[in-house]
Length: 324
Image 1 (cartoon, rainbow, N blue to C red):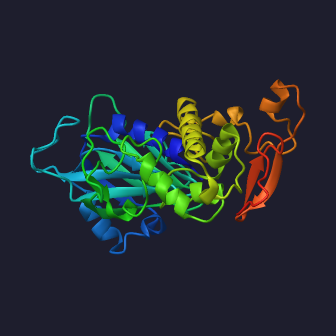
Image 2 (cartoon, rainbow, N blue to C red):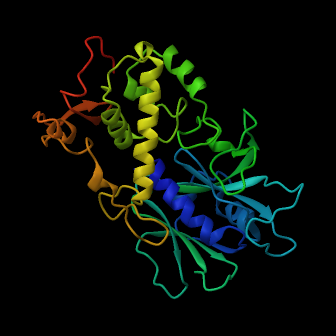
Image 3 (tube, helix red, strand yellow):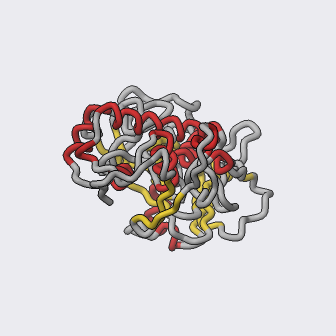
């Protein structure tokens, strides 16, 4: 499933292509992809047709496009009235295989095309935004915009506003969010009596960290996934958060992590950060850090929450009082 860096790659691509453009028409080819929009396809298209895409925002793995009434015609990207604020947003959940692709109208439809948006013309930009989803675990729906709990920006955006898509309002800020509070994170982390990786995967504590980047962050921080959170010293918590930021920024620079053709950015290109992974998916291979120190140790894979965890038994020793 796409994690924070992959969704951020998509957000950055969409900003360049859709921000400031009007949705001229919407074609729902498979109603299953808008099943979370309870009022159905007619209401879905009615909310979108004629709306102007004000921005593209991300918090954790959630991605949404705030919508404005475009009654005065298309506005240049970034221009917004002093008092006009978006009341609704188009929220995209990519699931296991969802893709948002920008395509020219003369490009043949993708095999698993589910929803097509035709956008107002601009220069030589593609006219269509297409939602493609092979496994149909993802989806699109329109949701209300609500004030953020802390008064800060809803998420990472070009023109941040203290509003958030209602369906994303339950998740915490992510490590790449400028408004992320380490003090709040650490206080809440210490109150939990659980294992460190389980805590990192809790989107109510810190969002955007999934199985792959949790393994990579813990490897970089030299901490085992079963380390009890209530024993974690402040410096250790700072180290694991810094490692999470570093690994996600490295992944962003590489365009995200792709293991097959299901994850691509808006231009259809795959990420290649999987070539730089140090722990995840490297079961039985030498730990690169230990190898550099002249120590032989191989990455170990263990079952974890119906998934897997990958650690080095030498530089990430399991704590005696470890917890899941």
